[in-house]
Image (cartoon, rainbow, N blue to C red; front, top):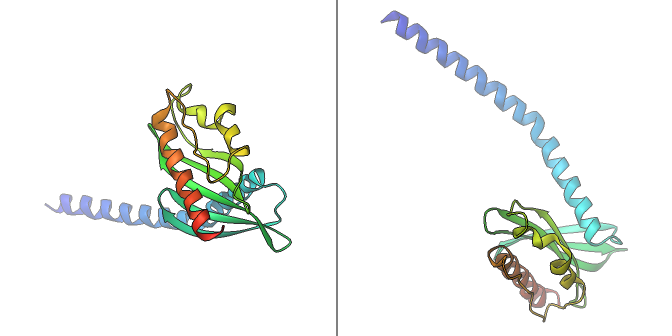
Length: 170
């Protein structure tokens, strides 16, 4: 009986020490991870709207819209970059879509996804992304035949972003 108690006490001490080490490691690495995520996001925002000198972020959190980033130049808003996140065929898809102050799409960038190569990866290829340089928020976003399960949720989130833009910024 005492052997069982000694083993239980030993395992409890090991668990407490392990939990403490994990907690300490997390407290050290969490700010570094958050800073790296923000730097990566800023880099991608600059790829979508290259002439902005600052970005102001507003959390939305509905209809697939995570945030709207106001791209600013000399204190004036030049574009609204919507960060969308939806579930496609087999993964979470996160993308940035930019709408200028006149309501024209002026950029699209896929941040992350893990869709089927050859089908779901069309969301970051030429025929699909070209529509974000020629359409306005009043136009319908196209889906891709054969990749509907991936492109339909992206389309719906972009249309929600367009509706948010029309309601709040146009």
